[in-house]
Length: 94
Image (cartoon, rainbow, N blue to C red; front, side, top):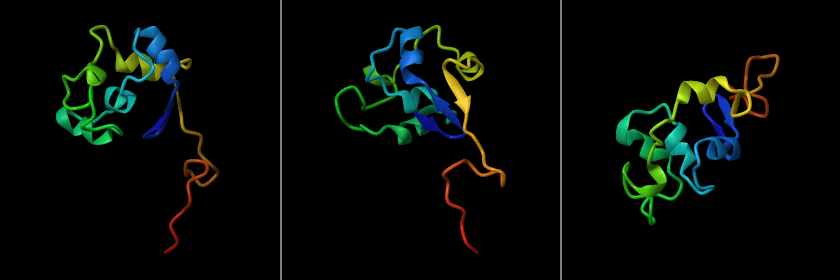
């Protein structure tokens, strides 16, 4: 899953933290603060996705976002082209 400037292996993260495969990883991995993270939820309003304390939005007690971002098995930076843009991203024409 791509989020911001990183690509996350949600299967590896889910396995490491014993999360269901349908956990809301965009909310878990977001750097947004508080309820702002909910803006990234693709299933907002559905069962398990109604608040930060909903089942699919809870953060595991031992969750460590710094570890996830350091561990190459869980995430890697997005590759950039020679112009410094993320690969595959279209450049704006001025």
